[in-house]
Length: 136
Image (cartoon, rainbow, N blue to C red; front, side, top):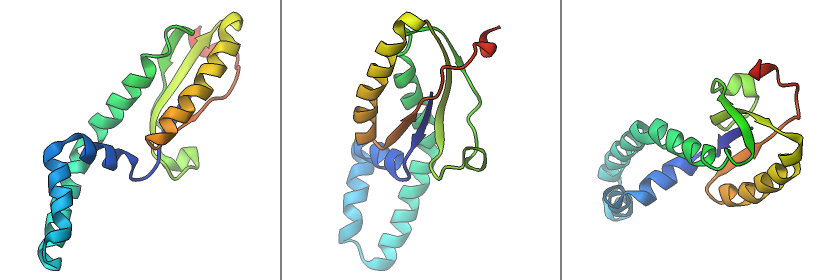
C-alpha cells in the first residue's frame, strides 16, 4: 500500500489546522502587494518546516487502521518521485501481510478509506497479492 499527497494538500491542512497560520494566510489579501509577497514567503517557509511531521502524522493515522486486517505490517522506504514516476510525494509505503480470509474485507475497507482520504488530497494505491518475501 502506497499513499501519495497531492501538491498543496498538506500545506492547506497545515494552514487550516493552525489558527495563527490561518489568520496570517487570510491577512495576505489585505496587505499591499510588496508586503504580501514577503509575508507569503514567510508563511510558506513555516509550512515547509512542518510538512514532514504532518506527513508522518497522516501516515500514522492510516497505519492505525491496518492492524485489524494485517497479520504484520512493515514500513518500506519512502521513494523519491523519480522512482515512483508520480508527481506527488509519497508519504507512506507499507508492506502488509494479510491472510486470504481477510483480503476481500481489506480491499473493501481500502476503497472506503480512499474516498475519505481523497477529500484530504491523499491518493492510496495498493498492489498484490504478492509472495510474502518481505516477511521471511
